[in-house]
Image (cartoon, rainbow, N blue to C red; front, side, top):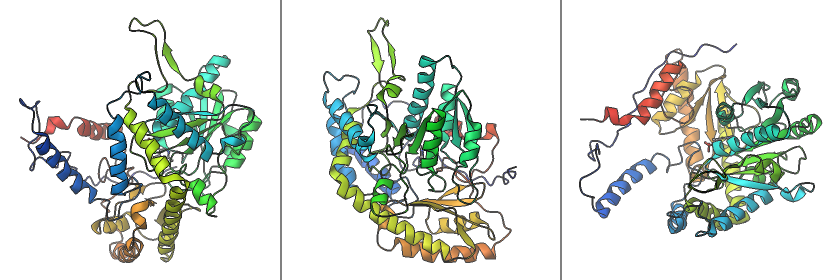
Length: 473
Ligand SMILES: Cc1ncc(COP(=O)(O)O)c(C=O)c1O
């Protein structure tokens, strides 16, 4: 049984941090403001916010961190930002961008090894969208080809909450398979025991968000084949970096279409694909599975309607920028960045391992997490925060999570981490038993939120969305 959550030490997060510099808009301005003034305001805010990660002290989220690359993508985006991907007759380029992004990703995942079926893909707005569409396709295929209506999916408990969200949205039962506490990899036998006649797919992560570890995908592939069900590999985080890590000789097992049981893969272009936020790819071994999830309404008075994903209108700008990111990096660019990131991750892990009080969990890749059996890891996090570091906190066990990105590969960052961590370990020892300020929160919508009550979480989300109610007067 899991321990009770720690008492909440709530940080107050201001959702209106700029009110003292720029008067808030409570209504539409009577007259439009000059563009130059607006852009100055935006530039000033963006420059401030970029300082959070530019020094390489922020885990994940800024995968490229290269302003020249961002400017290039912005130009590519701007050329097509105003076009709608639903109107293909006037933007046939959308089909070119989408088709080529999918083809390049399929190639990376070795779809050339697929012989019996025709592989294909979809572009979605992010990892959650890609996972949702994969889950929907398994459900729809079961409904269309059998009398199974309420189906289930089995995921390792470490797999991303996007699976829980998809199953919540699409009324799929989600079963959780335990993981080995030391390796953090899913227990394949336990997963097998959870499969029944209504199971449509199992899940494995390559790698999972929490620990950066890879589930035994080859064994899951065998299991899926034996039981005649699908296997979704969540490569949202690892899809665009692990193949290059494998090529560079790092300990990365095969997790793609070379394994015959792998039926769908999600890979986020907006993470290590170095594209803009808002794009991801979901791949299908067989287009028939993808095609089962299409929505269309032929009898509508507004005309026959169909759209490939949950979105209706979509900007072609994001497709163009994603395409531009991929073709500008090329294999050589992705390989070079992967080499720098894997190397930096190895040096950071070595730094953690140099402290006997700390423990790196499992056998991680470019992303890792560490805990302590002696000290309060959140006290260590508290002290690292005073040095400008921003990690995500984890729970069961309490741990600090670090996804290494390009900003950490800059000169001096590893050395700074090493020095700050040494100080933080000493500080946590001196303050042992005192309450920590930080806690286990994914991202940071709520500062040090540690409470688990539903109403409390809902109120935090509502605060964030309804900030206009609390506009400073
Ligand atoms: C392994 C994994 N899967 C899925 C997701 C969800 O992706 P997104 O936040 O783009 O929806 C993430 C996000 O970090 C992830 O790390």
